[in-house]
Length: 377
Image (cartoon, rainbow, N blue to C red):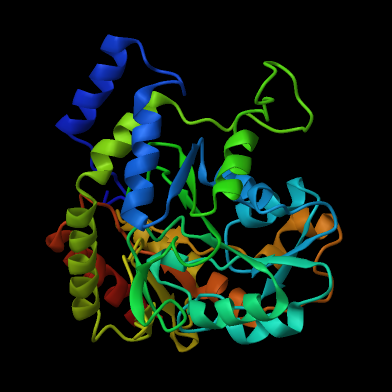
């Protein structure tokens, strides 16, 4: 079986994990947590990092950090994981959705203005599959309406955006808005198994996020709480793995970009299959080698995945749009709203094998299988 994703862990991770065990520092009090926060925030270019237990927690802590509260609205793409909506809902805010650009699968920034009301508090662009959102229009919109920007960079470790608004220079995703969120799940470019981080250069936002992840302990009175917060802490064990992973992030990104080029070259003549669009303003890290099938093939993503599985090839579907999530519909959200490009991406999009242990001969096998299945259509 060619897996859809497999992480790469090695001796350096073992070495730092052994140090945790030998010293007894296995909880969130361990020294690797603050070291990982410092190293990762420095890599992205922000002043502060707040390590948490997963990417969903990072989104919630970030929204809390900028002061999102009950009755506020957070504008986000429908085409994303449910975590984005959950983070807003848990703080009493309402997710407001925009559709995606059909070529990049990122937020359609031209729809932002029409979604802004007096209750709007923040915009949450999601850098899908490692490709940067076109952030300058987001920055302009946020400035015009006094909104905060919460970047969901869970899939975009090391991706870069060329911003006119940021001095006509390349800037890493996660250092463009007011605050950003990363995930370190097992299939991310930097993994800690489970884990996440909030990044910002605003000291007050960092302090609020740090308090939120630690039960909002009172600064002067232990076990005294004035707000309802959560235990979202990262352990020293997770941070140790993250440090080892971060030490070779540049090599990992170079490998991913190399395989992306190889994938595209091999699929150049496979009919009815396209990859995420390249854009002049963004340097993708190709978190997943994702494709969308042409409607003319007569095959949807589910059929393609079933046939790939029968040939020993793993794959995964695209996100179901937030507007179509049964639990959110049950709560009364998004009635009569339509997001056709999000629906199209879900129906015809899938991830091909994308792991760090992938080889070029395996990509050749995937190419031949997809070509055969597409020919059957």
